[in-house]
Amino acid sequence: MNVVSLLMPRHALLRLLQLADSVLPIGGAAHSFGLESLAAGGAVSASTLESFLRVRIAESLALEAAFCRAAALDSGQGLDRLNRQLSARMPAREPRSASLALGRRFWSLFASLYGSPLPVADAAAMHHSVAFGSAAGLLTIDPSDATLAWLQQAVTTAVSAATRLLPLGQSAAQALVWHLAGDISAAAERVRDTELSEVACFTPALDIACMTHPALETRLFIS
Image (tube, rainbow, N blue to C red; front, side):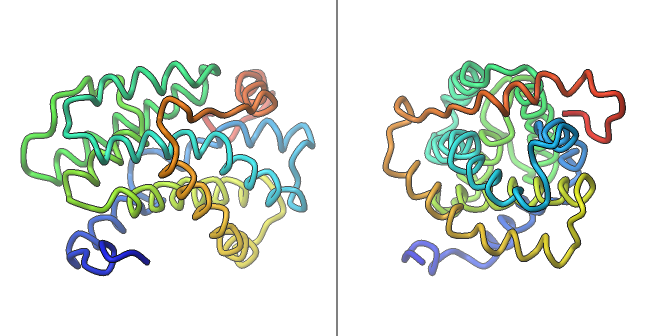
């Protein structure tokens, strides 16, 4: 744990924990980000879920975490630019739309809680990771802590979705999140030491799964 984390005001830590709660009412439980398609096709099972999540953390979630960190470091003047850049790096419409939907709701909820004017930005084009990072910056939360928190909630949300799609019990789900802590930390460390322009991901199978999701005969999730 770094010195900044140790000195983080207790109320700021409480705010961070609240914003990173996977049950925050922004609609996260309605999205699987392609996991439903992969599970339906047999590409991901309870036995391979951990491997799938490790790849997702290292690729697509790390990409979004980099933008979360950049937003936390930003003074609030470049949020629209960050959102445009992230949209351009998400080729599949479904996860891009899901990220924007969560971002809009998060930004709206945070505005009602924060009580002070937020940076001027196009709320309709606000990605979740960017909104989360900006909120953390406004709360003077260390960018590294914000990045870890965003990744943790993303993984927790994904595992929660998996419990509804796969034979995965609640205890096993918690053990899985616990085992992925090292991957989350590694992803956060990597994006800390990488320029935003150099951050990239390559997940064609996941992108295709997201794009084919609307064609599933039955669906539990929006994405």
